[in-house]
Length: 343
Image (cartoon, rainbow, N blue to C red; front, side, top):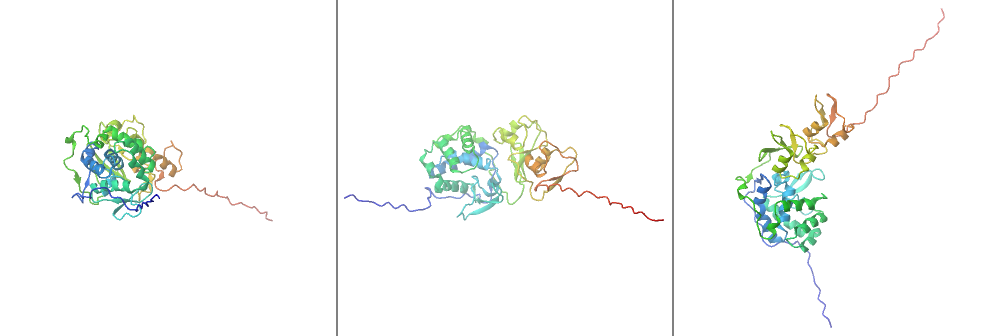
């Protein structure tokens, strides 16, 4: 007679090996100077999480780089959230509200950057849709990248290829095997933490430029000698990003004092900026740049044909769609009726 064994698998939340340790920088946010500095600063956290949970260090670093824009995104600066993880059901930690796919979405807020890395690992480990990823080797970063996209970590259809490019451009795969890429440790910034408090439109000094914020979009002011190529290298972007974000040809000659956005423009102007009166010399593109609105949306809101330009003094709608023109009723001249009168 065969013995039958009943295997009972309890449902529980998996915790990776190791305990969570919090850093001392509870009221500070790390601001990276460039991608190389970010890698140098956080590579050890990524390796530690790989050893704790089995997620390739290259994948963790690449996701953090992409999701946090090298640590300079609004979520990274104000909430130490380097992976764009939303609150989801059951989250009891800190919260911050930020516009993403929808307006005012809830994102997780952390005391420090380490907590963000730690929670990212637990989020992947405990997410049922990500379980198949752990069938891949921790050195198979390509399968992990494609698997994250398949599981729906991000909505971008190029998410996997973007992660792979970051990994290969920076040799992050070496960390998966316990090796170290050939990097200049002297590039690590002297001051790693800046206390932001609750200051809005906080300025960040990155290399040659200061980053400003308008309509919840990061932007810089063009300096003499800047080109799309030099800015792409400085801010570690992909070649097509800056021209696309600013709706300009790749070979555009940048002018000193010009606004260049580092992130996509939005569909509407910020709250309180409802209208704009066109000044002499302004174009739809210059107005869209000034308010951080996509030019196509600006045309749509004002019921204008793309390619046409507004007249000076014309009122443009920036947040709502201009009402359809209502024709005024034609004036009816009173009919004069003549009466014959007898003398």
